[in-house]
Image 1 (cartoon, rainbow, N blue to C red):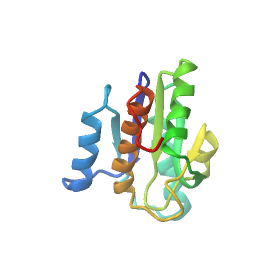
Image 2 (cartoon, rainbow, N blue to C red):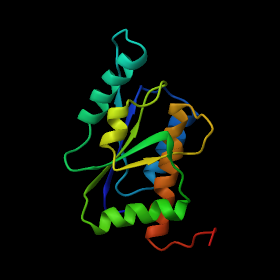
Image 3 (cartoon, rainbow, N blue to C red):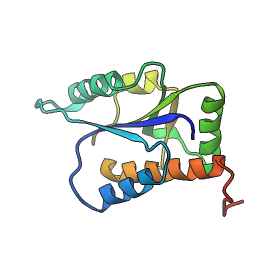
Amino acid sequence: MHVRTHIIAMGKWKKGPEKDLFETYGARMRPAPVLKELDFRKKLSGAELKQAEAELLLNAVPNGAVIVALDERGKTFSSREFAGKIQKWQDQGRGDIAFIIGGADGLDESVRARSDLLISFGSMTWPHMLVRPMLAEQLFRASAILSGHPYHRD
């Protein structure tokens, strides 16, 4: 892919298999996705927490970037459809795509409203620390599809 991908996520992870898997897929991509982890320390809950996280997430998005929020109410895509979306943004000259992963309580409506696209990895609940390597794998797969590597699902 020729666009820069940014993964902007709430929470900081520690060592473990999820982080190792993320780094494995990231190392296979050129350029590797940029991971920006955000931490929120104030004692808030509910709507106040989601609003505070939304402000941090949206402020971390590079200027002019396509914003893709991972949200349980988003649309599901096949890997080829996902690659097609990235190709479209690349063809439009968009230099950056920012993927937003919210905290444990999900995303504030302001993030959904600002997003160019809402995507879902299905209706099951996924831990937000596991979503990072899942997204990295799909970004790697999209880059392989777009560069013409044979795709075993064709």
